[in-house]
Image (cartoon, rainbow, N blue to C red; front, side):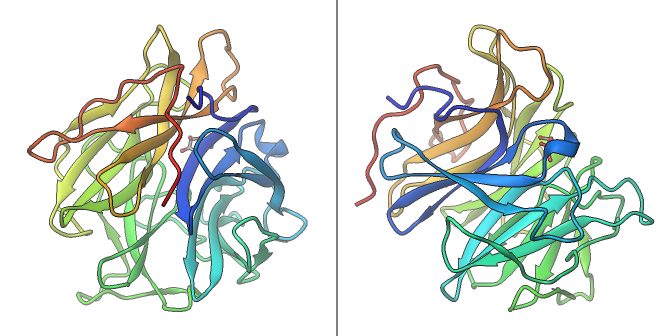
Length: 301
Ligand code: FUB
């Protein structure tokens, strides 16, 4: 078994993704905001043994980023790897920062600033420009789904990821916020349905958790179905800000998330864990059982 956490160190907001036959996790380095000036990544061939890739991107490369580099989301396009990230934790449209893009020839970096400025630097529909997730739809179109401060937007990415373009109805930033949404959005498709997931509660508190909705389109409407990930006082606290990995071609799913060890009190003591995610016959997600054991070895064929 992998054990949980799957690797050592304080790492939060983990995004798991498979490139070729390798699992990758891109987390936030969980520390004081002023110390969050870089990203490490982790790779594995079997979900058990993880290799650390240090400083795949940092603030010496991103000139406009000073601190609070958060929640990487990585996708491969045209044989390049694009890493979307948040920086500076901006509190108003007068501050510099927001969501940026970096690019690399390899999933393990080094990543370089792609635009030289943020991709999204303002609040739209009340959404703080953080917690980005890049989503590839069935037709190949990429969208950015993002937002803190209890608002979530979806925005259509230009084909070369250099900007945002209007959607068919003329909207540029379309709000898709479901009930109770706080931050940390994630989307995937299963059996043709769009599963939209997000974090609720406060990330420093015991109520941090993950809920979801299902719709026929990435634009919703998303009606909250219920909570599927939360703390278990026998295992860990404040479980949330997750992502989902599917074994290609199989109905085998994992949830990758962070939680706080029971013996830790620091708000940033967040560690990255993986557990299995199951669906019932109706396609509803079963509540996750969080474990200390983690997951079994799984090599991608
Ligand atoms: O890790 C920094 C912030 O904490 C994330 O962006 C939020 O989602 C929360 O997990």
